[in-house]
Length: 400
Figure 1 (cartoon, one colour):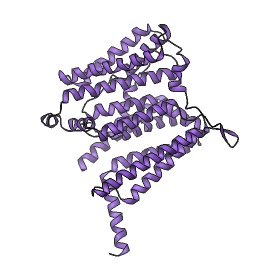
Figure 2 (cartoon, one colour):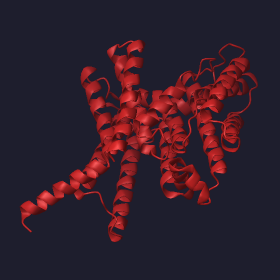
Figure 3 (cartoon, one colour):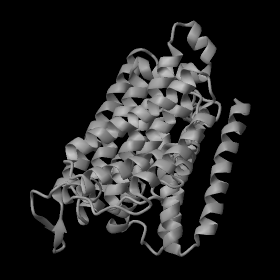
Figure 4 (tube, one colour):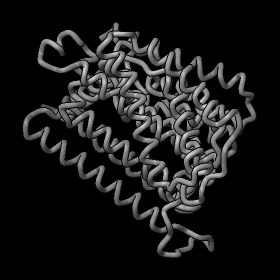
């Protein structure tokens, strides 16, 4: 075979692979294009270390809830109560810590447990009484919005203890005391970023080697190596930016740990595979021996616990619990999942896609605010993006 024929076959393999995975690559490309667009239109403000840190802090609770919402959507349901639950849990935390002087560990444990109980209770009605999740969680949205007002007495409660505030406003401490161009430089942040990058690339190569040994490797070499180069550049570049400011925010560490856990949960465990099977065809899953009721119950309980954690993060960031906390969060969380490739019919979606979808929403919010675009037009633009994402999902599904 000639070199020209080999190159032609290689190009054909790349195009076939891209067509089969077009949604994943289009999503990543969309985030890159949006970031470059706002970097240009904001005269370089977007990629400034202080703004990148703010971007993380502003979207941390959305990313956290998007992890659980993806499971709910993949399972074939929806949860409209997450914003109200997060606001209610933040209110409970404020009353416990500020008014009752309960210690932080006990308060956090109680609040996370409360979130899991709330989610599990809603999941119980959905799973065992077959009440549509839309109705159950719509009722929950109203109930917990009212309970948040009741717990707070219609007034804001704060400030929180300094240690609790570190959940959202603290940073991984600098132990080296290094400088860069005469400015403080958190070398530990760069080292952690490089170490995580090395681990990700190592596992990518390890998985590819296993696939090749079993004849399952489909990704062309050019795309595989290019993807890993982009991962290295993105992670190390981001770590460098963080190191130039204050380092890695504590909430970023929490987010990364949760993302890693949920990627493992959805790709490497029986529990994760069963959620996808149930979302794809619940009757078939039940006939194959899957306890779909218990699975639905557990999925909503996980969502409730994550909504509670997001409520704690948001309260710590504001340093006060307000009756309006959590308002509209559910819309951003659901939008992040659908923009990230989750199917409206269930059974399809990836954790990484939901995270990218959340950051697409976050970058758009941040960039439009810097540009001075009013909240009215921001809502219009986000609505158009969401509609386009769902349209493309349906379009490519029909083409498949």
